[in-house]
Each structure stands twice: as C-alpha cells, then as structure tokens.
Amino acid sequence: MSQLKIILTSLLTGGLAFSGQCAVLWVGVGQTYSSIEAAATVAMPGDTIRVKNGVYTQKQNLINLQGTSSAGIVIEAETTDSVFWRGGNEAWHLTDVAYLEVAGFVFEQQKVNGVNIDDGGSYETPSHHVLIRNCTFRDMDASGNNDLLKLSGLNDFQIRNCLFQNGSEGGSGVDMVGCHRGSFLSNRWENMGSNCIQAKGGTQYLVIERNWFENGGGRALNLGGSTGLQFFRPIDAPFEAADILVNSNVIVGADAAVSFTGSVRVEVSNNTIYKPGRWVFRILQETVDTTRFAKCGLGRFNNNLVVVDDQLSTTVNVGPNTAPETFEISNNLWHHTDLFVFEPSLPVGESNGVYGQKPRLKDEANMDFDLQSTSPAIGKAKSGSVPKVDFLGRSFNSPASIGAFEGNPSSSSARNHEENHIVKVFPNPVHDVLRVSCSGDVDYMHVVDVVGRDLCQVTWENQTMVIDTHDYPNFFMIQIGFSDGSTIVKSVVRFK
Image (tube, rainbow, N blue to C red; front, top):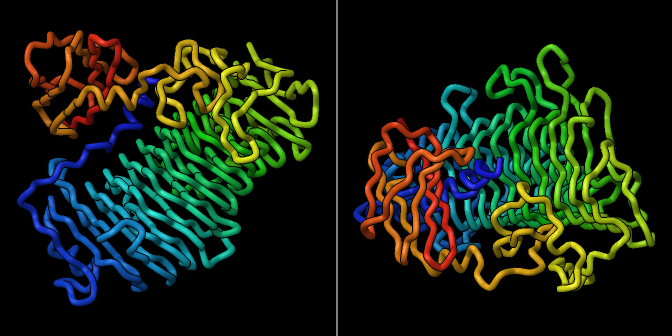
C-alpha cells in the first residue's frame, strides 16, 4: 500500500499540461462572457476560463467540459479568495467533465450542495482527471444531509490546499460515492456536521495526507458508510470503501476521529489524534448482506499518537457484523490527560504500543503538536507503515517517530530534495514516450510498478532520458537517486 500511496499523492501535481498559445476567456461584468457556462461552450483544450473578482450568485451547469491528457482546461479566479459564488441551492454542478482544473474560488451559503461533480448517472463514463486547489467551501445554509463538495462517479482526482468550513449539521465537507484514485493533500476542515470526508458506495484507492481536521462532527473520517445499492460504482462493488491510506494528518475533536464503516484494507498510520469526543475509532458495518459485502476488516491502525481526556467513552467502538479480529494495531502512543497510566481497550492485542508516557508536544494550548526533542514518540514507529513525509513536509527518519510529526527531522527534507534537484517528467499522463530530465549528479533511476517491482533500471547518460512505455502498466513510478543520498519519486499515469 505504501507504493500505491506515492502514486496517488502525486497523481495530478503537474499532471495537466497547457499550451502557451491557448486562449484566456474572461468572465464577468463587462467581459467577453457573462458566465462560466457561456465561456465553456467555446472553450477548447488548453484554454483558461478566468473569472473577474466579484460576487456571483447564478448556478453554473457545466456538462461535458473536457480537456485532453496533454491540454487540460482551467477555470480560475482572477485573484485567489476574491471570486465568491454565494447562495442558491448549488454553486456549480459539473457533469461528465475531464482534465479540468478549478482554482482560487470561494463557494459559500448554498442550501443543497456547494459544488457537485458527477458522472450523469452513467457509471461507465465517469468524470475524471479533476484538480481542485486553493478553493474555499464554507457556511452551508442548510441543516440536513447537505455537502460542501459532493462527488459521485469521479475518478483520478486531487483536492489540494482547500478550506472546508462550517458545514451543514447533517452533511459532510466532502462526500464521495463511487469515486476512485483520488488524493486529499494539505487541506483544512473546521466545524463539520457529520463528517469531514465520507467515502462510500464502492469508493476505492484514496490517499488522505497532511490534512488538518478540527471539530469534524460525528466521524471526522467516515471511511465507508451506507449507500443505496443502485448508487454503487461499480454497481457490484463488494464493499463501501477499500484501499485507503490516511497518513500524516492532525485530527482534533469529533465524536470519533476515524470510522472504518463497511470498508476493507484501510490503513491509518502516523496521524496525531487529539481529544476525540467519544471514541478514537469505530469499526462498523451499516450495509449488511453477507452474500455480497465483506465484513468490515483488514484495517490497520499503526504509528498514531493519540491524546484523550475524560470525554472518552471507550477507545474503540465495535459494531455487529464486523471482523475486528482481522485488524492490525501496532506502535501507537496512547496518553490520557487525566490518568497517570492509560491502557486503551482494543479489539485485538497491540504490538509495541507506548503507554504511560506523556507525548511531550511543543505547545498543546496553541495546538502545536510537533514533538519536543525528548518525546517518547521519537524513533518508535513501525517500519513499513511510515509515509514519506510528515505533516510539515519533512522526511520521516528511519526509524520514524510516532504521530504526524517527525520529532527528529534530518537536515534535508523531501521538500529540500525537490528544491535541490529539479526533476521533470513529461508528458504526464503519457501514451507512449516519456521524457525525464533533472539536475544534479544522478546515481540511479528505476522504473517500478505500484508494489515496488522493477520494470526497468535506466543507465543515466544525459540530462534528459527517453523511455518507451508501451509495455508499462497504467500506473508506475520513476525513482531517481542522487549522489547526496536524496531520492525523488515521480508517479506517472499511462493511457493505452
């Protein structure tokens, strides 16, 4: 699963390519186009639809707005956080879109859903390759099952550097039904009703990494759920959710930080969980049909730093029709602020848990959960379950620290590696021929698949290498090692 994580976390960073000769279509009062809808009717792959600063209230319906793998379409605010889509039932409804980037908008005060992206009910033709970045979704004007961002039948997507704030009492920050191959990177959720993120209806292959979840409602992360059988994507999916990685996040409050709900193969590792209201995590099965659905199981809860107080009802809530005995629990640090020694009540035995020691966080009062240099969490993580970087983007050591923060960061981080060595992989997605260029003294370059098996070892000869990808799978990675000991990994999507 760790190799899959690397692919998904970088799936769309740099994955959309644009031609410098393409048009900018201006939208707003006095501009060429009065609405995004109008601009979308003439937009071509590679074009940018740019919206003038201001407040807009008319719902935008965008159907079949599609770029290509080499030339996406961008919809962007003139200035980030200065274009507001305010009120109405929905701000935007996007159907059957592809290779689309949305950037810089504020969506607020909607009554049904903030933004809705779907496949038009056609499961065989999902929306795909959508990047949403630097957007704000906030202040739902509703109290029921209404979501700030609703995704149904969306594949190959990324939500990055967004803010989700003040959701509906009965809704989610992001609700997914039948979505696949997506990542949530460096976002922030505050004051949700039911969930920050809900993934259900056959959702599979997600990475949730380096996010901040605060007061996330009943279940900050509801990994699974309860979906009407007619809405599953694919229609015969044998689980609500599967193959999800939750790494390097901070989760503050909520009744439960995480709920495994009708899900399988979900790994929750190296997170900092601070004072959940009732449970640290739950194991539930809400969609029950033993002839079709596997019992919730095969989950992992490793390397997490957990701080609880007297709000806690029980550490783990286990519901009927589940398989808690199939879970792996290992190398977590548990601390109760009101007890000298706290041993959590767990559904299976934990190996190498850290009990009875204060985590020594830098400044709990101001929610700075980085580790002091004397923290007992340092160097105690289980190897094999550690993500690449911590919440702050620093490389985890080996052995790594427990929790979302590396307490003994090396002088060079993953971020510094990127600064020291510029690596370009293009085109990405690729059809046939891939080009890789980089600066610095290269020791090696490997091409590997999702489980880390070598597809090719490349002898580095020039600053730009050309690789024939005809026989490669749909997803693979380029691993480049440098003489200074640093490594950079780039993931690649191939369309056959």
